[in-house]
Amino acid sequence: MVEGCLFCRIVGREIPADEVFRTEDMLVFRDISPVAPVHLLVIPLVHHDSLNQLEDGELAGKLLLAAAEAARRENLLTSGYRVVVNTGRDAGQSVGHFHAHVLGGRALEWPPG
Ligand code: 5GP
Ligand code: ZN
Image (cartoon, rainbow, N blue to C red; front, side, top):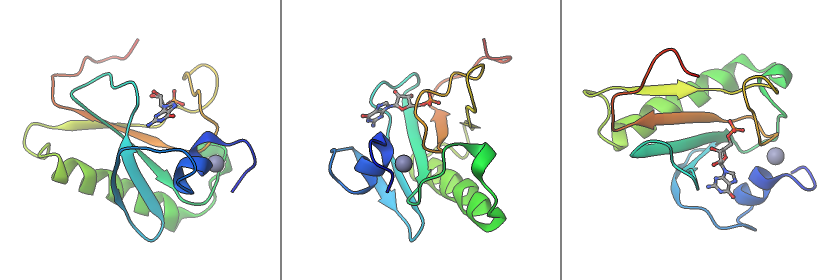
Protein backbone atom coordinates (compact mmCIF):
# COMPACT_ATOMS: atom_id res chain seq x y z
CA MET A 1 0.00 0.00 0.00
CA VAL A 2 1.46 3.30 -1.11
CA GLU A 3 0.09 6.46 0.49
CA GLY A 4 -1.97 8.48 -1.96
CA CYS A 5 -2.10 5.75 -4.62
CA LEU A 6 -5.58 5.53 -6.11
CA PHE A 7 -5.28 1.88 -7.15
CA CYS A 8 -3.85 0.81 -3.78
CA ARG A 9 -6.96 2.37 -2.25
CA ILE A 10 -9.14 0.41 -4.68
CA VAL A 11 -7.27 -2.77 -3.70
CA GLY A 12 -7.96 -1.93 -0.04
CA ARG A 13 -11.63 -1.19 -0.86
CA GLU A 14 -11.22 2.35 0.50
CA ILE A 15 -12.50 3.52 -2.87
CA PRO A 16 -15.29 1.52 -4.50
CA ALA A 17 -14.76 -0.12 -7.86
CA ASP A 18 -16.76 -2.46 -10.04
CA GLU A 19 -14.71 -5.57 -9.31
CA VAL A 20 -14.81 -8.45 -11.77
CA PHE A 21 -12.61 -10.87 -9.84
CA ARG A 22 -9.62 -11.16 -7.57
CA THR A 23 -6.87 -13.73 -7.45
CA GLU A 24 -4.18 -14.21 -4.82
CA ASP A 25 -2.10 -11.52 -6.57
CA MET A 26 -4.38 -9.57 -8.91
CA LEU A 27 -7.52 -7.46 -8.98
CA VAL A 28 -9.58 -7.03 -12.13
CA PHE A 29 -12.12 -4.21 -12.21
CA ARG A 30 -13.98 -2.05 -14.72
CA ASP A 31 -12.43 1.18 -15.90
CA ILE A 32 -14.41 4.20 -14.74
CA SER A 33 -14.17 5.81 -18.20
CA PRO A 34 -14.48 2.93 -20.66
CA VAL A 35 -13.19 3.48 -24.19
CA ALA A 36 -14.62 0.19 -25.47
CA PRO A 37 -17.71 -1.91 -24.61
CA VAL A 38 -15.41 -4.02 -22.41
CA HIS A 39 -12.69 -2.06 -20.65
CA LEU A 40 -11.14 -3.74 -17.65
CA LEU A 41 -8.05 -2.97 -15.61
CA VAL A 42 -5.80 -5.70 -14.23
CA ILE A 43 -3.57 -4.64 -11.35
CA PRO A 44 -1.25 -6.45 -8.98
CA LEU A 45 -2.38 -6.15 -5.35
CA VAL A 46 1.17 -5.11 -4.47
CA HIS A 47 2.17 -1.64 -5.66
CA HIS A 48 4.64 -1.13 -8.50
CA ASP A 49 4.84 2.33 -10.09
CA SER A 50 4.95 1.00 -13.64
CA LEU A 51 6.32 -1.77 -15.81
CA ASN A 52 9.72 -0.16 -15.27
CA GLN A 53 9.71 -1.20 -11.61
CA LEU A 54 8.61 -4.76 -12.25
CA GLU A 55 11.31 -7.34 -11.59
CA ASP A 56 9.13 -10.33 -10.75
CA GLY A 57 8.62 -12.31 -13.95
CA GLU A 58 6.19 -14.66 -12.26
CA LEU A 59 4.00 -11.70 -11.28
CA ALA A 60 4.19 -10.35 -14.84
CA GLY A 61 3.04 -13.73 -16.14
CA LYS A 62 0.22 -13.88 -13.62
CA LEU A 63 -0.97 -10.46 -14.77
CA LEU A 64 -1.13 -11.66 -18.38
CA LEU A 65 -2.99 -14.81 -17.34
CA ALA A 66 -5.46 -12.71 -15.34
CA ALA A 67 -5.99 -10.53 -18.43
CA ALA A 68 -6.78 -13.64 -20.49
CA GLU A 69 -9.12 -14.94 -17.78
CA ALA A 70 -10.87 -11.54 -17.75
CA ALA A 71 -11.29 -11.74 -21.52
CA ARG A 72 -12.67 -15.28 -21.20
CA ARG A 73 -15.23 -14.18 -18.60
CA GLU A 74 -16.30 -11.29 -20.85
CA ASN A 75 -16.71 -13.69 -23.82
CA LEU A 76 -13.96 -12.03 -25.85
CA LEU A 77 -11.90 -15.08 -26.74
CA THR A 78 -13.50 -15.56 -30.14
CA SER A 79 -14.00 -11.92 -31.13
CA GLY A 80 -10.62 -10.83 -29.75
CA TYR A 81 -9.29 -8.27 -27.36
CA ARG A 82 -6.26 -6.10 -26.67
CA VAL A 83 -4.05 -5.94 -23.57
CA VAL A 84 -2.31 -2.58 -23.16
CA VAL A 85 0.25 -1.41 -20.62
CA ASN A 86 0.78 2.35 -20.85
CA THR A 87 4.17 3.18 -19.37
CA GLY A 88 5.35 6.71 -18.73
CA ARG A 89 4.48 10.11 -20.13
CA ASP A 90 4.52 9.48 -23.85
CA ALA A 91 2.28 6.44 -23.45
CA GLY A 92 -0.19 8.48 -21.40
CA GLN A 93 0.13 6.57 -18.14
CA SER A 94 -2.07 8.53 -15.75
CA VAL A 95 -2.11 6.28 -12.67
CA GLY A 96 1.21 5.36 -11.08
CA HIS A 97 0.28 1.82 -10.07
CA PHE A 98 1.21 -0.77 -12.68
CA HIS A 99 -1.85 -1.89 -14.60
CA ALA A 100 -2.95 -3.48 -17.85
CA HIS A 101 -6.03 -2.50 -19.81
CA VAL A 102 -8.14 -5.27 -21.35
CA LEU A 103 -10.14 -3.83 -24.24
CA GLY A 104 -12.72 -5.52 -26.41
CA GLY A 105 -16.27 -5.70 -27.66
CA ARG A 106 -15.59 -3.71 -30.83
CA ALA A 107 -13.04 -3.63 -33.64
CA LEU A 108 -10.01 -1.78 -32.28
CA GLU A 109 -7.93 0.45 -34.53
CA TRP A 110 -4.27 -0.09 -35.16
CA PRO A 111 -1.87 1.66 -34.87
CA PRO A 112 -3.03 3.49 -31.74
CA GLY A 113 -2.88 7.28 -31.79
P1 5GP B 1 -3.59 4.86 -17.77
O1 5GP B 1 -4.04 6.14 -18.43
O2 5GP B 1 -2.70 5.14 -16.58
O3 5GP B 1 -3.02 3.84 -18.69
O4 5GP B 1 -4.92 4.19 -17.23
C1 5GP B 1 -5.54 4.58 -16.05
C2 5GP B 1 -6.99 4.21 -16.17
O5 5GP B 1 -7.58 4.28 -14.89
C3 5GP B 1 -7.79 5.15 -17.09
O6 5GP B 1 -8.35 4.42 -18.17
C4 5GP B 1 -8.88 5.72 -16.15
O7 5GP B 1 -10.14 5.85 -16.78
C5 5GP B 1 -8.90 4.71 -15.02
N1 5GP B 1 -9.29 5.26 -13.75
C6 5GP B 1 -8.86 6.43 -13.21
N2 5GP B 1 -9.43 6.62 -12.01
C7 5GP B 1 -10.23 5.54 -11.79
C8 5GP B 1 -11.08 5.17 -10.70
O8 5GP B 1 -11.22 5.86 -9.69
N3 5GP B 1 -11.76 4.00 -10.83
C9 5GP B 1 -11.66 3.21 -11.94
N4 5GP B 1 -12.36 2.09 -11.96
N5 5GP B 1 -10.84 3.53 -12.97
C10 5GP B 1 -10.15 4.68 -12.90
ZN1 ZN C 1 -0.57 1.55 -5.67
